Length: 146
Image 1 (tube, helix red, strand yellow):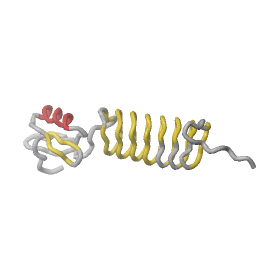
Image 2 (image 1 turned 60 degrees about the horizontal axis):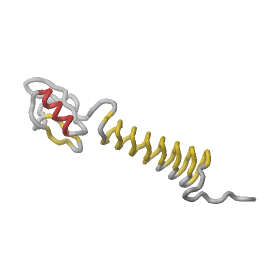
Image 3 (image 1 turned 135 degrees about the vertical axis):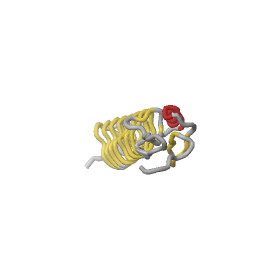
Image 4 (image 1 turned 90 degrees about the vertical axis):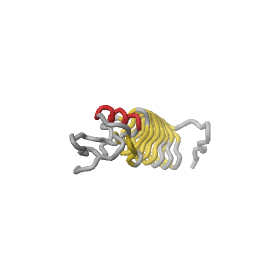
């Protein structure tokens, strides 16, 4: 039975490649590489999997231009934790609904210090404070009921 020669660097990608480190237009496997990559560590223009790198990613941990996942880094991103210039969706649902005397405000945690400073100016307070890897408006954390 004839076998296909192994694909090395510079080898021509298949239309559909499946396996360990497959190279194809559509790749499915452990470390798939291609235009559309689906797998454990996908690398492609469109990557779907656990840890992805590509232009568009839907991964638990992703890095690219447009990224959705749990912990991500991208130009446009959405997720529980991430970094990049443009967060899509609600900005900072953590610590919503804090009350601050004498007046009640909805305070949020923001991914950047600059966004928290902007919110502090809107609320009429000064400075910001860190909350884990996020930033909250006002120099001190508000006290009172949630």
